[in-house]
Amino acid sequence: MWWLEEGHLEVASNQLNIGGMDAVELAAKYGTPLYVYNGNKVQANLNRLISALSAHTHDYRIHYAVKANSHLQIQKLAYDLGAYADCVSPVECEMALKAGLPVEKVLFTGTSVSNQDLRSLVDLGVRINIDSGSQLRRLAELSTQPELSVRWNPGEGAGAGLHSHTITAGKYIKFGIPEHKVLDTFREAKELGFKVVGLHQHIGSGWLGDDVHVFHDSVQRTLNVANHAQEILGTAFEFIDFGGGPGIRYSEDQTPFPIEEYAKGLVKTVRAEGYNGTIAIEPGRFPVGESGVLLLEVNTVEEKNIPIVGVDGGFNTLVRPAFYESYHEMVLANRVESDTRQKVMVAGNLCESSDVFNCSKKELREIAIPEEGEVLALLCAGAYGFEMASTYNGRPLPAQVLIMDGKDHLITERGTIDSIIGPQKIVV
Image (cartoon, rainbow, N blue to C red; front, side, top):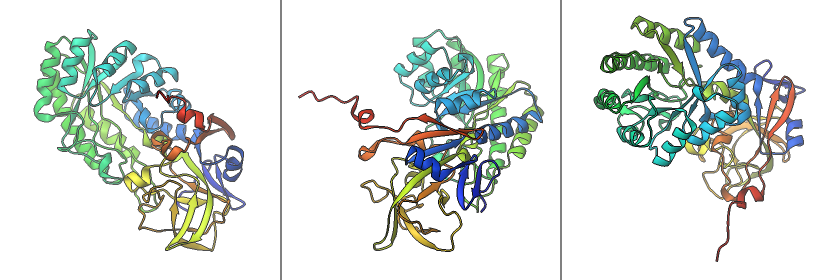
């Protein structure tokens, strides 16, 4: 089994263990659907990034991409290792502060940013990464805040290992200032009285092995822009942020992303161009994705037009298969190894025909045939799992559990009807 990893995902007595804890027992204790995170795995992956970068430079920052998993406890695990925060909304900025991060370590990078958002960010005092000329001019009207950075669109994206939705640079992409406008944006920022302290790029998410070369190409283009921009500004950048993107293996046939090659190539290219400031990156999926497992209870095993395995969660619980056609390894937690396997549709409990955990409703998945009442585990669900969950069909949000040093902790209570209808009012 390709996904086995000592200290993280193991098999004991033919049952799945997560961080040394029995997955079946966790499901019985906390109920399902249940997100389980191995906190030690989160920190192990962050430490791998730290080691890869520190082998080549000591002037770097890792900005944890809060959108991947914004739970305060998950954020704290990152911040305890010295990470900064990459936030995409004012609320994410507030969450980072509540998780214990000092304001100077919070960077906001948003798009289609409203005046209300800008006012909130100015009140919080966080650094703002400008995404458009409109945002720059409106910020000048709202604030005398002197420092900001600029996000540009390098014109080429990466992330083909997952889905086109995860590519964030190129012609038909809403993010960042395009190349033909970016230098004028620096001139305008200077005229408006801002001190531009950084340049930012982000070309995509979920990179696999071959995407490292696309990333390294984009680094050179960003450095070219940086050289011209610094001439315009008359000052050197404090930092250049090369964005996030390193991915994880969701399936056996995927090629792992070469973190060490990525870090070495990044630092080598940057220093060769003469830039001696801080190198920043903003990983999200890589630190947390592999750490999370979604546990679901099987409630239906039946032959309809096709073999159906029904479970007690749907795309309200994990939307990635329905939205991105994403693959998640499925493991029968009660009987990991089984001689009896079959191609089935693993179906959720929502009133939607697209509510399946296969990559599509016409692509059956071969799994061990479960019995009703057993627990099915979906692996690599730590990034963009609970974060994208909803209460569609009146289904409450799942509970979340953290395993740390062999102990389990409930970190999010299961949702209730009150958590769904509490804000609602009947007025007529």
